[in-house]
Amino acid sequence: YRGGIDVDTISLILSDHANINEDSASNPLIQYWGHSICNHGTRSHEEYDYDPLIPCWGTVSAEIMQPKFCSFHYCYGWPCGSSPEFRDQLYQNRSWGKFMAFALPSPSSTEVEAKEERWIGEGQKPDIVEITTTDGDLTEAGKVFLL
Image (tube, rainbow, N blue to C red):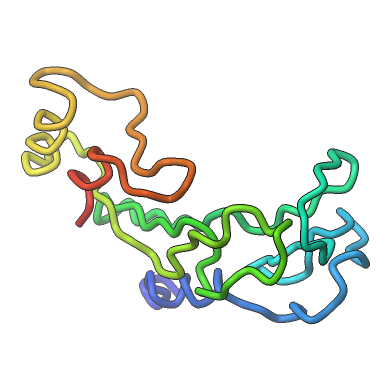
């Protein structure tokens, strides 16, 4: 399959809902985790009652790395684009429902180096560049690295 699986194919895989209709409480590994790749874990509660012993997290985000092209494809929330059904499906009301591509720094990439300098200052290298907030909004740095 070398070269035959592209970003679009991987994004479809990460959006897969096989077994989504199974009761998430029946997951034998982690109760309420869900059963599909794009995981909509829930306890089916209208309110979120935090209980660390009974998680209901599911998919938080999805990422695809493309080293050959020095790019990072990121989707905040569920990549399928569905809306949450219950309030215990945290942060999913802000899901992007699609992947956005960001430039990765490369030693030979003057375009990315120029973006880095514009964001963090000339001659400085970032340890971590936050591209989104915890609510899924793009940061100013995220906007700079957006392809």
